Length: 354
Image 1 (cartoon, helix red, strand yellow):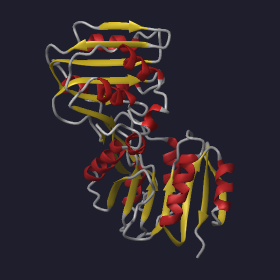
Image 2: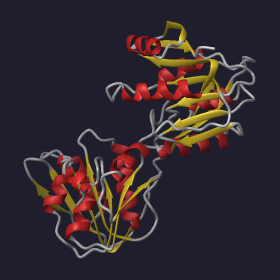
Image 3: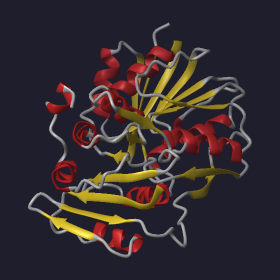
């Protein structure tokens, strides 16, 4: 195990699997980790497995794990679990984790297991019943292991599933900001783990209503999610709309949305470090940042947007916490800073100095 990984303690649910899983003599294993995949390092160091991978849906998480994982662990980022047969899949989850994502990944893990392979899951809840029930729905026999730190379950695959559930959602919304005032309907595809799965976020709606799009503007949306804002904007400009997200499923959903709406001017970009290297300067940047992360994500969105904007280009952010953005816009020396209410939100806007 690498020194940097050993200095970072595993999350309780992942530590539980490190402590309790039997050695089944597996050779091909996959860890779906909410942390830094220390379980994969453990397998490499103690189990002699020939192929160990750690999978992430988010590029930021995958990059952080790749920086600390042992040399024998292949860190992967994608919208679905990697294809190919596996002998063992381990999936520590968090008590506060997303239910639909957990169900979908468990189903995918079962699909990829060879008959005789094992799925092991755990949660930081010693009184868990829900995850146990999900395992019982997939397997005939489930072993249960409980401690004060949480609950772990494992089972052997003996047959394929009779029916697979599709967790993808497609919904429509009315674009009330279109110039011709006609009732344009925009189609959106979402999947578990993508922001605002199965619904149009109200903050995104306010951002659409507030943005003034020039007929040839090049537009950047940071944190595009399923792409609802980018798709609506793309109908209003002949320029290019760059939709950026670190979640690989968000990028996939945005691409599918562009195809459904027959939009050829949307480019969905998977990126986590802000080094976009866009081919054209940006006239307008839009963002609907999350409220977690101690403002680090918000700062990243603003910094990346400012780097991409042309002189005189504008940045609009929708938020319920405008004070931080006002101060940070001032720190970035943006001009014409303004804040106005939009339903239950605020729109903070500024312009890059000419």
